[in-house]
Length: 198
Image 1 (cartoon, rainbow, N blue to C red):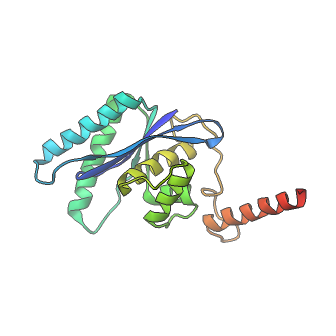
Image 2: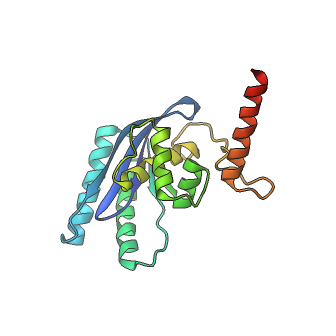
Image 3: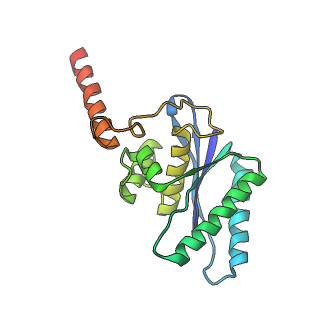
């Protein structure tokens, strides 16, 4: 199953394609950005984003699309552009009959790093490790799009026939611990078992 992740934006729309297999394994397929000049008319920029996403779907034939859920920002102009690009992504996915998952930034961070307030650099580093890449995907919009695609598969969203049991990163905290602390505690337990076994 291939998943197309989209980090919506007008100037830079991040895109990333991953392939998920058994055991939550993820393979890198593609990453990049769809760019539009800030000086172009809005309708021209939105058309460019639409055509760019359509071209990616035609080339990589994903089975599902993951889009970042738009959230409020102080910069109204930025959030408007993001919302418009997000609407285009949803419409193009629907046009191609693809199921869509919307994920908040905190959901993606929790799925990728185990911590919903992780810094952008931490997300990029984890994406690099998960996909066994030599370096963090650039620009950051592309890394964010890959993170969205991975999150979509790991959270068992519609269109992805994988194990939907929550991982340590997404389970509710135990004893008031954060998701990251729970993941760390379970990793320590696992390491302890391996030492005893040896």
